[in-house]
Length: 358
Image (cartoon, rainbow, N blue to C red; front, side, top):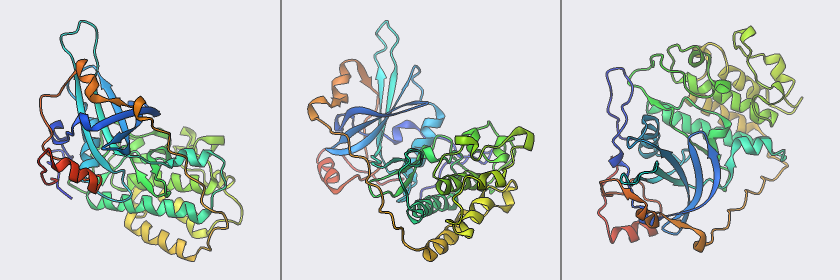
């Protein structure tokens, strides 16, 4: 993995946008498949392959640092359990127009056919325990990779764990991620989602990679209970108890006699109030592998993944058509940051020069 430019405060600086460009003419937008706090997600096509396209509109030319940070992590981090980054393009609005125009950034990633883990848990579908533990193992593999490369995700939650068509997990949403030069990151603006936030982040204290293990432990409890945190008072931490976990209350939501003791112990240790008492991601990965090896196979078959929405080419929107209303950023694509498929490589090589990933 390539190194990031380090800053004096021990945190990674954000890259320049021109490090991430891809040609808008290669991208077509389909219908919206998701809405978020900072934009919407479309299904689309890139060289004919189905992709996901996150669109983020803004009124200023400058791209927010958190967006560039997400692009940086997506580009430089390559792991089978991290969302696959394909490219991005930036469309600048026509400054000559009198009415307010919005600049738009398009971030292209692989399409996660299985959707969010959060949605799967809320669906009420019968789910095998070993099936869920394998998803948890993939998440731990991804966290181990990030932590080995000194990156803290800082926003782990079931909504940010996507699933592909084979139910393999993909960690996503790296807008809050930080890469640290030292083992400890200094306190800073509160980030993440309150319900999943570790105590040290919640109280704006110094934190380490164990800040990711706390929300992972909550997700593990969610998998065991087949419900999401905050639902029916499940895994809620209250100010009257200094935001500590009420494990007696949590256990009332878990299926009696169906869970390996070691699995409950892992989730309990991961959500320990004291960061130093939580396991490292690498240790938890080995632990989960041992737990899975001892488990019997599920009697339930994995659920069928959601169908891919039909994409009628006649109804897809080409970004090139929007050039009449928006001008491209004053730079061109000089490399693909990601080889999406052999066919894409061959077709792209005919028209542009490739550079090595940095």
